Image (cartoon, rainbow, N blue to C red):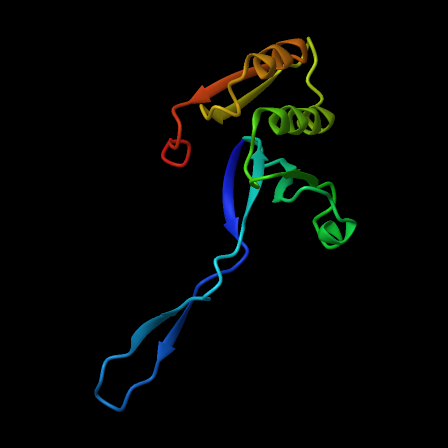
Length: 145
């Protein structure tokens, strides 16, 4: 399991065509507006089974139009900042349990980074109660490992 921030305003690169014999150059064009960050939480098994993503939107209230075209099974969450917190992590774990179906006979290994939102006592106890073996990696290293 890992989270990533997605900007709602993107930068794009254009190829600039110059007269013959000159080098082509890339030109970055960016919007003047700052945009907002939406957090996407993704999870995949070693056998390539995906848990539908969770999207954390920076909002106070949920608007049904925001998830109109989201992939089937997407968990939509909101927070003031648009980032994961320990309460939203528990909501994501409930979403994960519905799909992974861990049991005493068939526990599930969940590997996540050691971000503070993932490492609350409540989350660790929730994982134990629901037959999830919770392994954490050092923060910001999951992409390297």
